[in-house]
Length: 193
Image 1 (cartoon, rainbow, N blue to C red):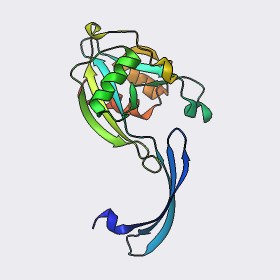
Image 2 (image 1 turned 90 degrees about the horizontal axis):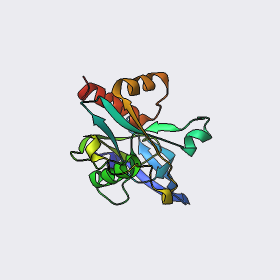
Image 3 (image 1 turned 30 degrees about the horizontal axis):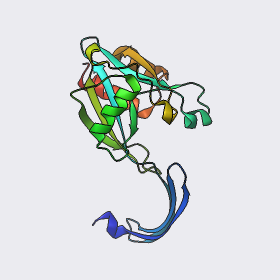
Image 4 (image 1 turned 90 degrees about the vertical axis):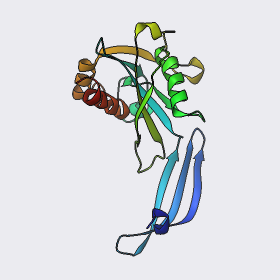
């Protein structure tokens, strides 16, 4: 049986279409016991995204970004967030978009970009699928200082850390962004053994 056989959409109401799209959907859901239940869920559609961990095997380092994130601040996080370079697809392919994001944010033009997985980050409310990439970098690939796009309000600091220091920052809470933790753990398991 397909999930489509277990759901009957009743109404979809747009609650907000300002920066992204917020909808409320009323639907009937067939439970495992065969009974139908009427449910209501909000979904936030901001489009799909991509993220990449630049790594240097010889130096055992990774490149990260540090920037202000209002939603984190709004719930009490009083610091800049340390993250992997990332962005929304904006109608581009995940690989093309992540190459552009990395160049904009950290200033490196990478070759050998490799997708390692994709995942829903918060499927209870957000429709986004995030595409996760890795790519090796070295000094010859640096084309600018990075920093993001000023016209998009970005002010991105570039950090180069050893993989061991980055993993220690995860353990201490210095890195608390989920996509970054996932890519650092993936790198620890698959690259920096």
